[in-house]
Image (tube, rainbow, N blue to C red; front, side):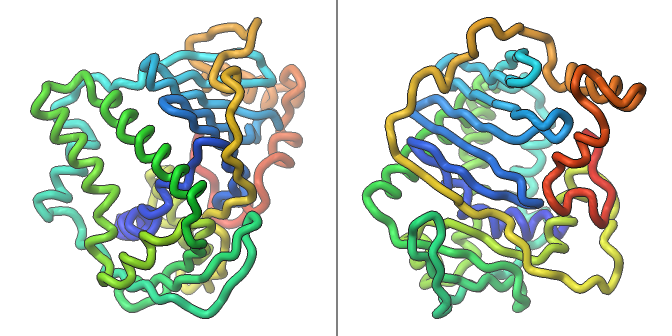
Amino acid sequence: MKRLVLLFFILSPLVGVRADGMVEAKTMMGMKIKTWTAGLKQRNEIPNPMTGGTIVTITRVDKGVQWTIDLQLKVYDEKPIALPYQKNSTEAEMINSAKQGNAEKAPKLEIRKTDRTRMIAGFSATSYEVKADGKHSAELWLTPYTPMLEQMDKETREFGEAHTRELYKNYPAAERKEMEVGMSMMAGMVKGQLPAQASSDLSKGYTLAMEGESSMETAVMDTMADRAPTAPKGETSKKSTLYEVLSLTADKINANQFEIPPSFKKVDDVAALQAQELMKAMMNGKGDGVNMEEMMKNLPKGATSGASQPDE
């Protein structure tokens, strides 16, 4: 759990790396994602290792729904953004624990600007070393804000705030407000852990990349799968890219990007349908164009090495 807390505090500054335009980025294990944001609409595209195709998620805060679309199977499902009210939800417990100080103590973070620079997505970026409790933990690459980048962060912040309000709209007024404040507090907690100068430096730059130890990547996979750590003891960590912007634009987005393609069929659960395709592949090696060999080939580099992968 401590590793997840550390990861949260380090990744908090990256929450705003989205745009009123398009951002293509590389994440852990080399997986590439694309994100479009415009007003109260957002579209995310990620590769589907089961089919070699693409899974699209469209979040329409203006409609209160989220659509998951499989472009290869030509199907989609629709789910409400708003969570059903649960008095003792996981989110509420996390927020209450953080507020009461009962959660694991957050690591003491230090950020030091270095003299290393490199080009990322056409921008000149400067390296900032991140230390947690005195030990090297990660490296952030920031570029100075431009009017375009400032506007991107503004659009992202407004979308995030609207999404949070929609997420908890089924909660009683007092608890809804508490959840909204709590989520904002958690997202901003990292600033309270940083020296004033470091916090000031980060607020002036747009985060283009984050590099960390490969053991952190394994820790995230273990946490997602809710299992005990699988990395061998004494394993030598290697630097890996946790996040890096590949390209970004602030061009006007075609409204069709936030709509369901014509003729696509609505189903109850896209993930369940994908699981059925996987079962076919496991039984006969070909499930309507899906087979295990192809699925393994489409996994991002490094995803099949080391620890076993989490269940889908």
